[in-house]
Image (cartoon, rainbow, N blue to C red; front, side, top):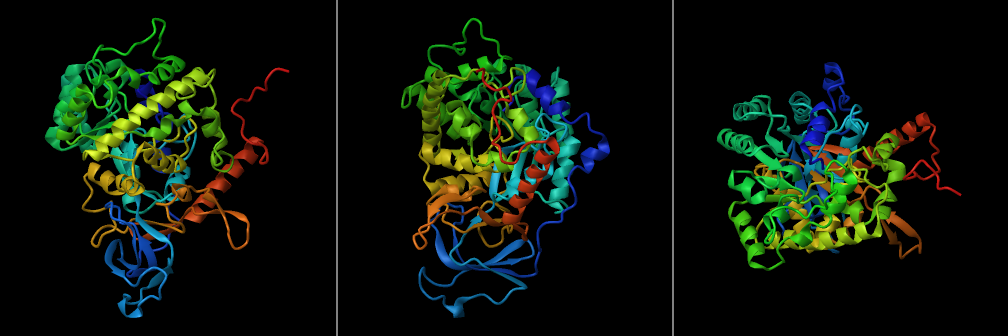
Length: 532
């Protein structure tokens, strides 16, 4: 989310510096949750959505040995008796998933692991449980403190010492003042165990040197194209120098400009005034080339030729087009920590809290912005481009786990078929991370990373939310909540997603009691009542 180099460097590099070394190394407790691995775990009778884009099939049994899928066997047809002769042999543990849907574990390609010492003031344990509780088994963490912190968490997760998704570590590049220092910083990230680099921007020679060095030593790269640098570093510029992917959308409409080089900033615009920044950002796409134009096609074709990946993270901007909806989302009262809620509140100084006079006109502009942005993303996908699913949660009323599932709904709104959404969230994410041989699809030989849900997510993505979806029970006549991921399996370890979410609710409840906040009163967007 953070795009100014000044804001970015202070936030990303200093957010955790006040905590002592031992606190950074031990800030996540040893794992108590999850069962397994098992020598032989068998899931019986589920419908499979394999992540490749193929339609659901089954019922099928899935055999997992330790951390690998070793057999997938169709055992019948829907609504008919299962053929017992087809069933794989008994396992050490068996889970009846009859009528449920089995999907590859979800991959969030844009997230941050905030801490108690960051502006959000939340623990990684809280974040991880919300992610696993929504079927997310792999995250790409962009920044999240210094190299040592993020790589340390990555290693502990890889060893399954903590309750956490698999972590792909992308430390940030920033505060570099020479070409030599740029190359050295890239080599340092590699030496420290980073899997890639997150860029925001830099002077031309420094940025190009860093991208060149990353390509030489095999580090993957992504970038939030910071608006202060976008005149020399839009997506055509950066991808020509080897950048692998982009976050959000800054830098893309600027590459589509035909009658200007620079965004139409008002004369009194100040970038570090976030009301200015986000207000004017909602007018950016209408300044770009029109859909279907020569320029539109030239930019798209160039990015496709370069096998460039785009991670739009629509979800982190959704409040800009509907503040009321996001600030009153049904999950906030039970799942949002009070300290995080305070971080979200309108503030002229906090990042992403620009609601001190958000108007109808702002929301209209952002709605129009979304339409053009979504059109480009959907067409890019249709023409073979890689579109990943990222959330950037922890800002702008977007909550970990919940915001990720909201991205599914927004991609469907953009024109993606539900199977295309799942494919982006699994196989495409794995390809972007260059991990498709290990994760990203439900396939024999791959890691046992799975999400199991009671209801059909292709019919309604809302069943993936931890709060479930509203549905009429035709037998009882009662309106019920259904869904929520039932089990999340990572590396063959079975996590009760219902219990993980219950743990989070208890964390929030205890934090509210400690802060003297009523458990019955809804959270308020402002702590100052209106004048009588």
